[in-house]
Image (cartoon, rainbow, N blue to C red; front, side, top):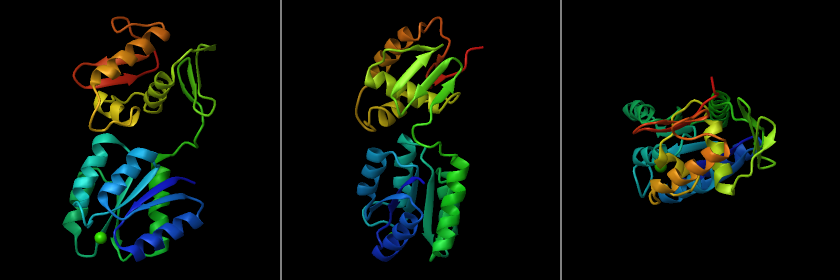
Length: 226
Ligand code: CA
């Protein structure tokens, strides 16, 4: 079971897809426009997005790029038959899979299953472990070598997001979008400040880092200390 955002302007297709996925136990949000869809993606951090490329207010490809700038959520694009160049472009722009319309409910379900399996969605609340760090999202508690860390809510969210992407360099812009929910505004200084507090609580510093490693000019990653 996953949370899915469907962005599709054709009411019939939108409702059919929503009904099929809801019947599979997924939590479904539908949007008829690109702007509403973008808000849903930013606001609800879904596990999967199904995106129609032909939308009334914005080209679906542009929306895909906007989503990719702020999120790594798996995206399945839907295109009309005969738009194969769009499929290649969309895969290059960061789509995970595609569906050609008209598609059957069975095709939709198969694609959704495959993409979710690839993304290996951890059930919500499963604790994440990185070396001696354990981050329990359900209990909103983090510990280091068995000692509970006293973290502010934002420090916790920041640590959890980094830990869910262990080994991956995350830009400060993406942290502003994913942790602070400020995809277009906000200051990277905010991220710097919280990172330095977090470092202190983990007993490390930028000069002597163990878990939190800065990649100059790119971003930050969390790693298991050697
Ligand atoms: Ca359309």
